[in-house]
Length: 364
Image (tube, rainbow, N blue to C red; front, top):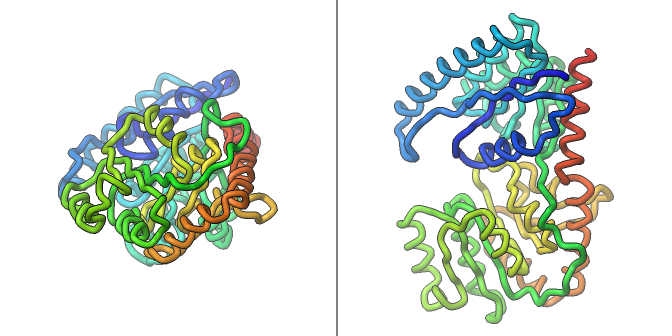
């Protein structure tokens, strides 16, 4: 039995928390035992830059203290540290240095999709990202663009691993049910950078039998803005439901035909809502941000969804209308998506890859 010190958020700070929560519950511990440290700072939802710095430093001192406490009492074989980048690079560097000094094998698991842009920016954060990565024996990334970029850096190319997230397929459908493609959903944070405004604008020109259903929280000023954009369609063809618990959101998605995520959110990484829609046999329309093209492309290069340009209402409308006008062809795309999620993103498959990376790390 090998011991893994797993450093990840233990309270709700977004998608990385949700992933970590599933990992702690579902990862098989017959070969590897997990010891956990919370690496998330405690802060209000809205906090100033200065507040982020202060809470981040406070969290750093706590994390170092907790890690050292565990290392004093327990033999740790692997340090598996998760990160969302940005201001967390100082924390990542410090954890990596602890591992180097104590000769502990280490993994930096990157849960963000703007690694090429960050490193190529030549900013302080970009420099810090490179410096922190160099402290670790393995670097796990979610998307092919990040993998290919890091492969070009001599000091990192032998450390990088492409490790997508996975999904529990207990809710998957067995077969694709023919759809009329009239029920379109957006599920996520209602933010301008998630493309919600462009999606509402697209609805103004699609077939009048198509309805849009918006699920998620958001700034009330922005929600008021899209309500004004929708005009008389608000509450009729365009409906807003607010935040739904995850179980209810999945049941809601099961009643839809299409999930649309026209995101251009800077820190977009690996939207789990896309995998959930694929596993339910739904069409996905999204952009080429981060890991999304990987998710919506089969091993043979065939499409498992529809990719559109960012900030492009016209392409969104055309994609939604195409599904409605070509339901048989759209169902075939959904079938490929269902096969892709079963083959590539089932938790058992993904966790088997994690365990292989662990074993490779310990045999070096």
